[in-house]
Length: 198
Image 1 (tube, rainbow, N blue to C red):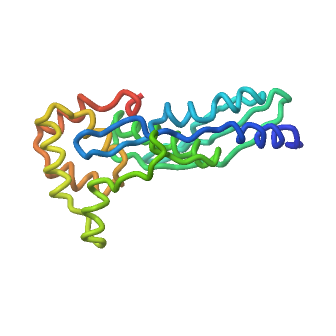
Image 2 (image 1 turned 180 degrees about the horizontal axis):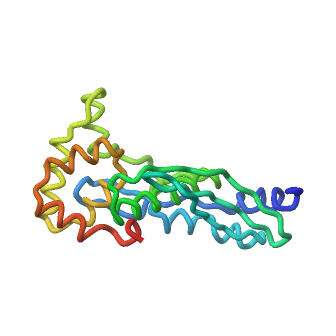
């Protein structure tokens, strides 16, 4: 199958792509992030205006999720950006939902060549955890993260804390989770962001 038509359309579409704006805030950690909706919004108009539909297929993956971002041109030509696999941090619906959202977001950004950007156009200030890790480059301060999560939950921001935890690698997530009380874990599960659990 030839791809000359869709290739030309993708080049035109990419000229219209915007940045994936970091328009969501995690108050507990004073960090901003671009959610899946912001990533789609950055590219969908450019794609559709050039006759391209965006499809994200799921593939079987043991212990996690695999997502393939595919572009379908109105001519019938298709282009696949490949398959991205992400392990589920927890083997439950929330863990798989979070992994799926994460995989869709990063697969889309890689396929379209876009990156998250502050909505004010300025360079992002270093997130709190980046500062912690810079001070201790070989260590991730699980106890400090857990204490920040506890503070966030006490400040009625369980959903912001859950959003932060959703992006942690599995080993860090498990270590932090183990330092939280059963009540704190329940609050995080109940307040898990809808886009992460959908």
